[in-house]
Length: 299
Length: 231
Image 1 (cartoon, one colour):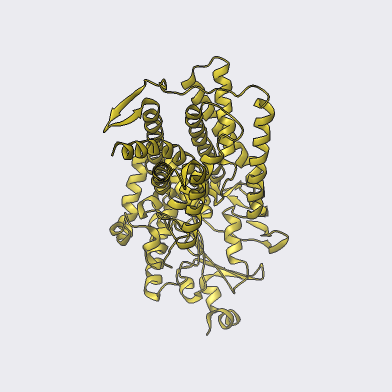
Image 2 (spheres, rainbow over the protein chains, first blue to last red):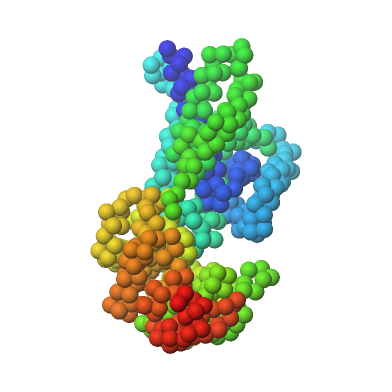
């Protein structure tokens, strides 16, 4: 039984990181209807920025906050300069731009930080071998508890922003009907750039938490996280933030359970394929995801 | 507006239109499909690029964007209503007040329009997409009013509505006009209905004004009667 709790708990912490990145995907998708393939790479760049600030002597917590600020600027900047113009002409073009961005950011990271010995990003939380608590017999590492709590708090704040603030109302209105939002006097350009900014800032946090767990940074830092996040967004429904969180946590837990209980035929190697098969099956049977809306409207 | 031209891409739809709406008037634009009625509305509210002069109380607004025009007092109820289907009725109304800052005043206005449209009040927490066509039209008008406009643009409010509901919508427009002095620019297919509420009428044909006058003048013109009023 403690093995079960162990997998579930570890899975929740990993899942929270996937959910953060997935939320970024959903925020962008709701705002503009685009799937940002560069979401993971933007997060990776921001994580390097966090490392850089920390390397310059900025305390880690502050460095992460600064990384999120840089992430916001990066996301908003990308939307305003690269995405908006192309989106007016062709939706498929946006897809190509985000792929190009994916490759470009990946090369950029390798160029700027690649020649140094692998950077070590310390964890935000105590992560010595003795820093854990036993609950139900399972090892609950402080680091994992911290990751889970920070991720859940940030998601909570995001939901408050969506549901309770005027800006959140504007974001929902733009997501629902951009033309009418403009007619209602909502500055849609600002809202869209901010959506990308928020998504990218969430990615920065996701990357920093993940980097702290992995320890070593590299250009491929967010590959697997991005695939799990895409699976979470697909499973939860691309327009459902709540769905992305639930799906992200479920995928994290599922990943740990499968890899843990079936080490022989799934194990660490095959669990990524399981995520991809999940995407495939969901798209096949329920294209709008478990919690997504299939846009029904009376006229 | 003077010499208004507008269109989509390289296609010019409006070829120099002169049109006035005085304070407290209901002005109706009549015309066949494709005459440029909706384009005129979109040009006035800044949803598409336009050239020529568009003045609001003497201030040139031809180069002002749609979002800013809402602040200046122009509200546009688009064809097909354009309500936010996924948002609740009350959230739809709040978006209409986005340009305003006083929460208390906004809440007071919401109560006011709930009084005018009691069926919206009953459905305040329901998703707008689940409302009937007539209710959505009421919601679209109420949302536009939330910005406290001086000029309301209303594009075919009767589209897809039962005659009785249409009558109700027009009654509301007339009441707002007479009680609040709201100026209305109305596009309407149903010419007989429109002429009953209009102060003045413009007749549009392929992007130009072919006739204009008071409602009485227009309805007594034989050739216009034949072409547009089916009598």
